Length: 478
Image (tube, rainbow, N blue to C red; front, side, top):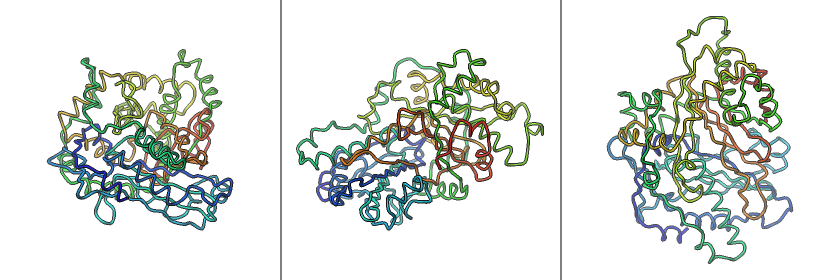
């Protein structure tokens, strides 16, 4: 670690609203590796730690602190004389890897305390927001290793999170091979948010009315929330999420299920082959969640309690590197934009069948097809001119029991994270999370469909698990 500390140079990295608009949450995943050969030197403690800190030398932004000045002006301040040391720890567990495997890796089978941070970005017991948290759990009889890796959204998005893990694996492999000199030859990263501005086209496309209104409408509470410190924001949001006591489940949607869904929709959606898996799941998950919220309150579509003007707010979040021509492995930062969509509740509550699902797909067309480089440019113009606006969506959504978020792009393949002893047997998000969220993950077999991480209030999740249409397509893993 001394070598890591000595390598850090002081710098200030200003963050943009494209960073701070999603800064409230962590990106926490657990990677589970099995010692299949019973090797005594399986992923050895010393080398794992040494390779981690060597990797951190290439990611100095993670040695900084989140600092805010004024309302909405946030930077990562790296101080060579006061380095924010990454939180790295290793513990021994009395749980055997075979027990995890037999239980299907479900959360209840994990050793206690694997996750050393929660889903929201807040200070640790020392009052510090750490910019990377790693907890290595060595399983009974060295039967395997679990690695918890969490990084705040202040610093990066899911794509960059996986790049950090891939780099750590690569550095570890080079160290195992004794090729220390090759580590310095690995591609370097940029953390300069100016690269996004430089990638924007001259053309602009107007931001849709709902998204514009969400980010620009003045709110005293939102302004106050932008004014308080990152530590206080994190504390408040962690309490809100704790109060929600959301229930989470992981589902799998196979290629066969997607094929059968497309066949069922073909009569009503002539261009069904051009509809992506993400579009299908956005429409299906939204209808399922809306119906389950209604049923959890003992209502039915015939109660006429929803007027034709009632809507459900959905934040559809897009990863936009491809639109800006940014490499997927060179920029460590956030390249996400949300589109806020208000779906007619009356239509969503209509029981799901091929015809009603086709109508839902049609209503999402403008949202899913409208992402482009000119739109990204307009969104960035909008938020950059209003630094405090980053709190407006979160303050609206956390005060709603029904508003949902849907991450449209599938997370990159996490199973490529090989330290040299083979791919992880399982990768999972942690169970606690905010309610009404849907995240698409690459499954263990990356060639067969996607995994779907979904959260809801417990009474709503009870109805989701009884929804025949949803469960015919999405099979529960745990």
